Image (cartoon, rainbow, N blue to C red; front, side):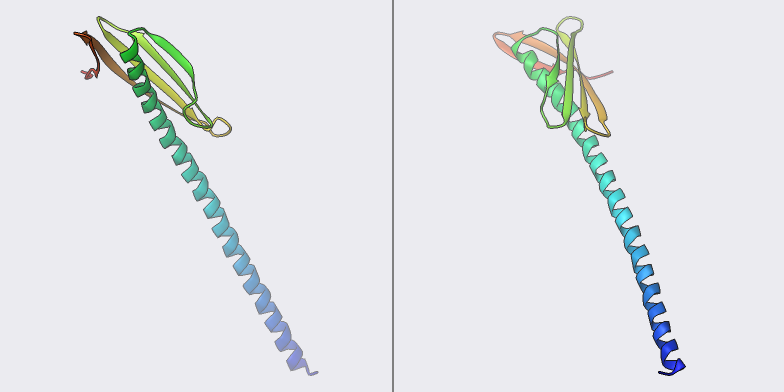
Length: 137
């Protein structure tokens, strides 16, 4: 074999190694970005789930106020997996109640906490019980 043939083979091998290195770096960067985007999407999903779970807690408390006009605290609600909901209903003036719901989602890792609150007025007129949200001033 001639020196020219060997140097061409060496050059081709070197170019193949460089191409493989470039492809490896590009794939590593893409994998890193995909993993990061997936973590961000999971965190956003937890945030939304916590928001809606807190709102659901307020509505759940309003439904319980329809049954009975007594203040209560409930921290054992398991409305969604890997989450926790705490509801507190406090009596205000006259027939008004302050409802606060605190939701935690992602109890295993990266817990997201959200809360929602509302004031309700309960009325019982002629056997018809109503619970209405009171506007904040």
